[in-house]
Image 1 (cartoon, rainbow, N blue to C red):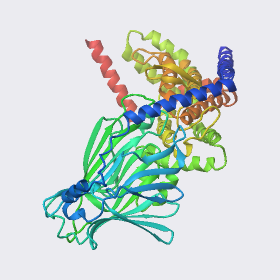
Image 2: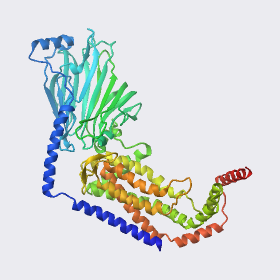
Image 3: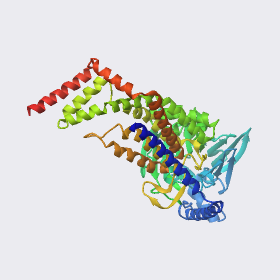
Image 4: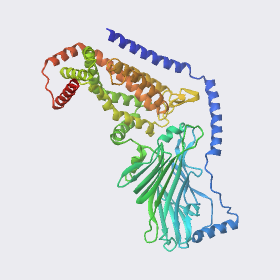
Length: 616
């Protein structure tokens, strides 16, 4: 009877806490006038932040040459020698389709602006991957005149044509009309991938073949999310090398370097967006570097990481010839999977090993399918229900094991008291009791072991799933980021400067779940962790840890634990009969138990240890 009373009280308590939280949220929601005032204040703060960012964060541009000054132009032509054929011009050429806008500068022939047309940042500004000098593409080489030149300093001559629906931009740094270094861009309609060719013509007597020729690509990741620390956690340099091996530089180190071989593509990932350079002729070697620019949470910091790659290029017959591709677009599995021949889908952080496999081939397609029918938040709830139903047999076995342990609790307590001064004997007799009753104390750990791959896969799925980006549900504005019901006027270490409701609900649910499973049936034993302490600590840790994580993840764990609680109550009320379990255990104890080799070995070792203790 006491058990049933406890269960009823637990349910009532849970419902009351949940109701109080929802009521508080409803009561404390701002009035329309307060919302307008908050909006005006927020706009003022954002304007101040942007002004500060413009002063502090924008990288200093290289001083432009005065093209009206004949002396400056003559100095440039003298410095670049044979490559002074072109007339210097600071103009840019625009390549644009329905998805992306690229601006290519005459100076350096490189992309100086890449803007997404279908996406905006958390504060409704268009997403830029390249802007204000945060990126540079350069080829460094020596000439036979013993000059060291950088293509980023050379002026290219643009020619824009159309080949059907394809825009073709030829940028040439000329030595003469028939001798040049060319960057050729080809943009197709409705495509994020831009064909990029680097080739030279007639330069076999100009470029010094004995000198080093190096490609250098640098980029500073531009902030796009409201939490720069959270965004930075998933901003990372990833690359394909050595026959398809995927490697990453550290996401947290202040300065991480690597030198690898046979590089096929490089991805400068900026959380939900990526800048990728792929090459059909793999770079034989490359020096890769990633510098972390984020030390703490900031509302004004504009950049996350600074990437750089230096790769030596080879001449063929005295000429350069490399066929490459630029990708500026979302880190979205639906988009990147279109480029299977390049393998760009592997740049998405699905997770490691079996965890990544579950995320990539189970959760991602399942959620994609469900979100095509349901609103994005409801799709998470439906996916949670499906996962819990599939896991219900494991839940049943776990609860059955707990019920058996509960039935044996009086006898275990009796053994503890009887052998309280002899830990070895107590352990030996306890294991013997478990063996006779047909109970495994480790079977209760099975759900945790089975759910670990699912937990980690989901832990990677929700923060990195592009399908969740800026999708709202209830009070959450963005399921891929944290929800906010209150802004704090101060920062709490490890918690943040805001209050998220979904982590609170998930923590309450996990508290009651652990109370039902751990608190009652797992009394503390000498040498074992205090389970009641863990019961209280785990929800608290979850509350702090998940406060700045994707609200979709907290929503999943809230619904998951809620469903698990009701499944366990249903199993207890309608399926498991403790009297029958007790009778079955007593029958098992009467039957002769065949001792396995491992059990026999363990018993003999314990008996030997006991005998040695007595002899001493």
